[in-house]
Length: 200
Image 1 (cartoon, rainbow, N blue to C red):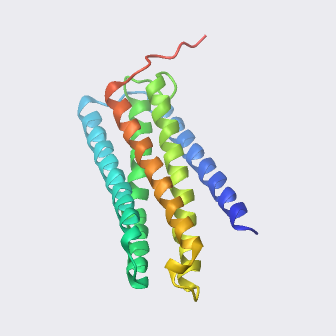
Image 2: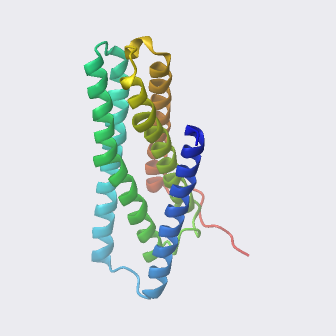
Image 3: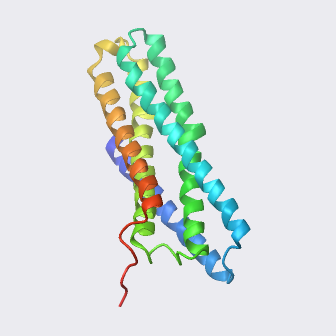
């Protein structure tokens, strides 16, 4: 199976998993008739905000290391850069992204917002966060865990390998887009634009 086919299957599997977990949250929420109390809502908001901070920290760290790799000339430096990107991914970006997605879903379902589709900004946040997770995991996953190991195991020095520059560029743009998308989602969380959806 080709690399792009594996990437497509991974992306579809991840999307289906996220949608199924969202539906599970909706199902559990419907069984619990009472909304969150003021105190429990505050705690959920704190967990949600901390998750977003962790998510931002992971993406910002990956972006910083990826940008710095343009100045690396030694193969061991490049290897350490890739290692740090994978650490940021495993220990900050992925947990932060999943925690912020599901705490956000839970808050939308169990508070005055009344679900994921009643307000445009809540719907945008839900879809946007899933897109950011898909984009980040597909691009970062493909480059860090598929392309970079091939580059490092090659006899060519990474700086003599065109695939290294192409992969680094792809990683930089993928992480940059994820960062911008996440910043947009944080902004609309505070502005809460577009109002309530009109449902017939």
